[in-house]
Image (tube, rainbow, N blue to C red; front, side, top):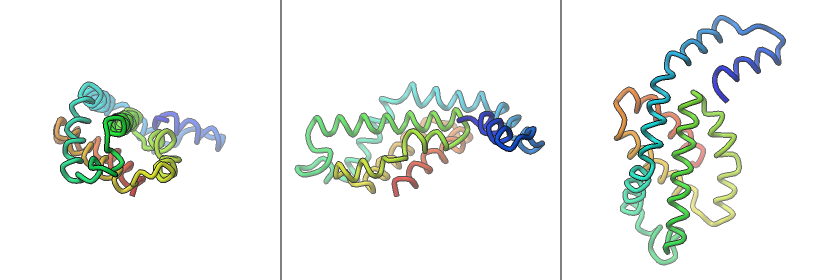
Length: 161
């Protein structure tokens, strides 16, 4: 949900007009729209490159994941991991576009820990994978764009920690 939607729904729930502070927040949201769409475009257009770079970095740090007995051992398992990495990168773009972590939490984090635990996937390993995605992604962005995108990766990392 975007900042605009959040303000409108909250004001409506309280049967009031948006406050001046909320209107300032909406104005700032619109002013950063070009930056947010640029970031989302770069990340989505570079998904394959980002996922490939991040996975190489992760396998280098944690070779036990792709060794016999590891959760990413075998072509099928590794492909599923890469699919998940792309999914998390997509969640980051949703957060960047909406200017909020709410969409990340609702779509991606509620139940993710339980799912990974049920499948026997080490959740700390997923947090490390998101750190690698963050590093690979931010390396493609300008300093200002990286500063805007980083908190959305951090939100997922914290949710997986």
